[in-house]
Image 1: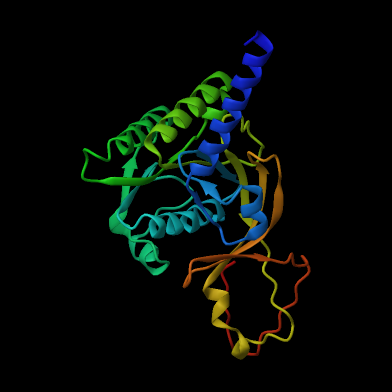
Image 2: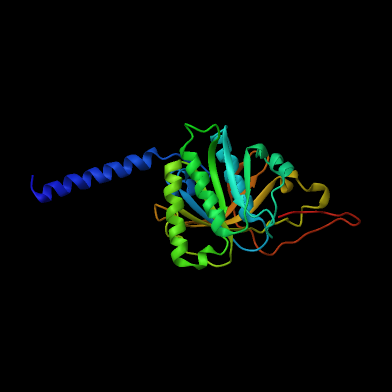
Length: 272
């Protein structure tokens, strides 16, 4: 066998191993065919996914909770480790609220850490613990952390992404890196990159107060931009998450111009 033939054999072996590994990777469907198609079946377990957003709307955490509910259904005995600053300015997790949207707070392990480097170290430790499931009594299904200001240091940011990716692969657990920023940050080293914001909800002029449906209070609507995937495809659109069923669905874009008609002496409370 000459060098050219050996090279062709090695190339075939590499491609076979690549497709075998990709097909063996567990994915979690998001119930939206267009997004699942971009993700080759869904969000991959054993990978690190980057989720960012801007402002104080809570859209990023809401989207993460939607994913966590699916992860907990996929792994009924698995725990979720969330490494976060419990005193952060964009919201505190509330146990009764989590239970109301189908997430068991007893399966959520919170690591209160305000320093980003120590928070990343806690994420890596949790992912390493997931690798030892055979010896441990606690199964770890997902690990979440906040990157804070780490993205402003390119060298440290790329090293962090690489270390977490290796730990997620070895631990075979879902890893989510989150943060609040209005800027696009480097996504090299991450499996996917999501940008989440609150979408506009339209109430037509025909919807007076007595006719308001309960679905307005049983769902959240986000504008989602999936800008990085392994396949190279992107997706932009609105996603609706229904709390009672935990199902995500694609929603059409609405006009920014909305009109409201409120009956006299009546009040309406609406949360977007």
